[in-house]
Length: 258
Length: 258
Image (tube, rainbow over all chains, first blue to last red; front, side):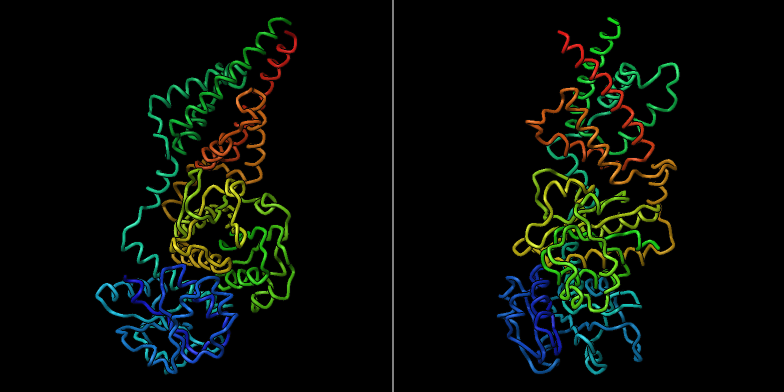
């Protein structure tokens, strides 16, 4: 499976909680292969706690001594980096990074996403082992993300690219299926019957003056027209109008008696 | 600045570390307004530690008792949710969520991103206060993200959308502005007053049985929430309800006389 060809490499991590958080983020997004280059504290109960169930990833994590070992078998490595480096280098944002990963693994390649130390990041030497640098576009005045959060952003983008490649329904499709679930949209003629019923009811309760209708009905048509009304919703609205008329007739009756 | 009109609302958070992590993620992505609904442990040194310098956001966080208070002044609320819910609802992925937020704040609106409890998420009642639900497309076999990680994903997408849109007003924005016909959108608190008024009126006219409400109010919330209601339209709807109640009281009066 494509996502299994993408490994996450954490270099010289000092806080085991971040290793656990990274494992959880990977598992959430369907990735499983974690490489730890000279972690300061691993295995660790703190890592297990933060992984919150993603222990299979921690148990299967490859602990190695150097970045080179972590990259064995990979044809592409992408290293996370702050934006301004002295050496010019192909720089991708997380979305471009994900597209590049999917393109490569689609051709049967192995790819590595490489993350540096909590405070110092990756050294220039380590960054030069990566064909591409990846920068998460953060606020320049507060640019350093938590390590597990940075892993979350990149593996999230990888999953989004993978889902897009698999083909998922568009926003509009989703809105329609959810909005219309167990109910067909109301037809134009049903809508007209509703607007007629609404208008006569508004007259009956004394809210709409047929002599001075102003823009009331057109405003209401725009309001109800905008959302797209289902047959089910139409039945509810018609039912409300019917009950309202019964109430109004009750009052009209009382008035006549006064 | 647009990003300042987007607030992050954390409901009933149990681990202060997640509050700190969320604050750091917000600061990294240029957001600043944090609302905490009944946090279990705040202020907290653990929150400060995980915020790793984003203490301004913790210091300025608004601590409130209810979700309603956290949404005062907002015209749009998007609630994070697991995918399968009994009541269908417009469901967005994080990218669609970010696009929707930017469209709204581009029109001067206030928007809320609402996150639930670490283990239980948001209640159905809380989710019904949100016009849209947002689902982070995670692996179904391990779908629950860490709270701070979920905040990171959504605010990252908000920043990506903001960077893409910066300065340039989209077609969608112009379409929606005309749809709002130079009238401000109703705020969440105005909407809640309307739903309350609607519910009591439906009970008064005998359409809604408080003993057996079924899904009536949630269906109506979905219907009215979908289109986006302007203040002008809200006044019209409230006026209709007031007239309906007068009529209903007339009928009730007659009934008592029989």
